[in-house]
Length: 321
Image (cartoon, rainbow, N blue to C red; front, side, top):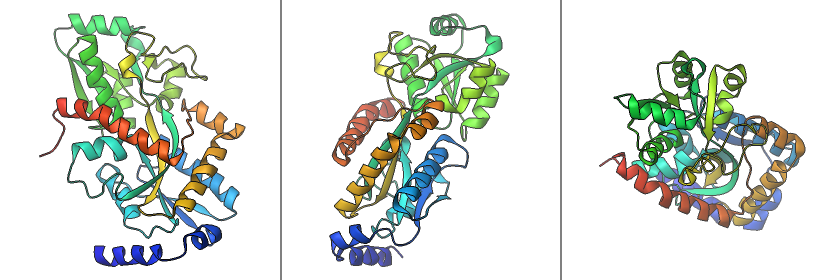
């Protein structure tokens, strides 16, 4: 099967590059979302699909293909012909942390993919439940130092940004922490609200309604500056943790060896899309931040993120043998 796919990809590569880019798209384009419906990544996938459908006057549709931490969905696109008709929403886990954790992963994040555009970054928020009485990060640290046992924290899975941020926070704050991974954010948020966990590290947008209701109290978030729609939440940087500045970022990728002018055309249209006031309003509502990058800039960004998180992953003993 892999041999057949390689032959199909090779055949596509022999087509004139300009002809592919000029005529594309002449049929519907698939955007794979390797995440469950309703989450931040899935919302972004559908936003991108709607906007590109309008721009190119052709249907861009979302197909959810979950499993194996997103690897199944990514692999389904990595082995597709590089003709622009199969794209995938990727993120920091798929392009950085999971490949570092699993050197035998079925795809390589740069050799098997054309990483087209950075879409948006969602800050991680350190949150506690309302009844805990904790109102600041200092109070959480003080609790950790007097509790006599590690502070428990939740994330949406092993190797996620929330997991790695929690480990780094514990070391920098000099408090013992224990990670409680969940299969997705929703269950972890439910347990956090119920008080079964000391604190959580969800993506800001996924807990917005709980922050507004008071069920959860935000102590800090990981963006470099305060988020426009959440101005009262301090950043970890301003609270003395500049090394914890990060976002759970999402991106658009396709198979390796996509025609360069086609990839650049998509990159330009994503950049234009993200500047539209209605798109900005929708993204900011979920606490996400856009940062336009060229393909070259995005490639360098992925390399820098890998360099940054590799030692954290190795120190946590997460690299499989």
